[in-house]
Figure 1 (cartoon, rainbow, N blue to C red):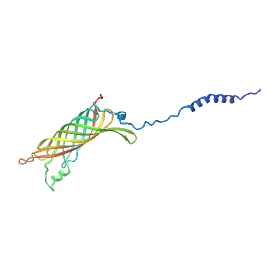
Figure 2: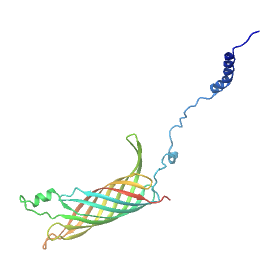
Figure 3: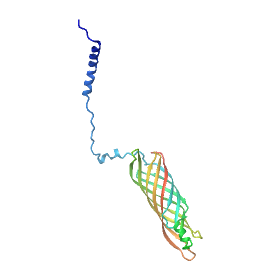
Length: 236
């Protein structure tokens, strides 16, 4: 009478159990990637969906800046802005600001003993404006391979008025109409908060009472570099 080893019988049973599963695995279809081709113009809505939309939202901002390009003054400034986005690309904004023009090295040199001359310079004190923004670019930036920063690029045009004061002893006040143009970038820190960087140049038509006998109209530029934090209102 022939007997089988219990170990051999167990091995045969295990092999019989695994064989169907192995065959089923071999029959599974291979997973392949699908090339959908080039995205067409009519499919642009698929790729332009924004993570941080602006359409229909208000924007309140606090900004600090500097006017470093004047011939005789250097001026720290602070601005408060408020606006509303009528679409993803177009917005209106109003703002007001203040600062104080300080004598730069050129003016101090002219007033020194070598020249003893006081230029007819005016220091910035305050301004108010209203205008529009056009933001045609919304983009994503890969930051050092560790994250994606969403931002837009905009241009702005404004009209307003600027209050300045003569730095000569008479301290004459001048209120000047101005036109401004600028460019900026808005970096989205969250859905409700952005960091805004901006360069804006304002052209002033300034009436100056130089002395008791002579008066004149001057064209002056105030260029400001600023950085600020803005807060977006609720989405639609």
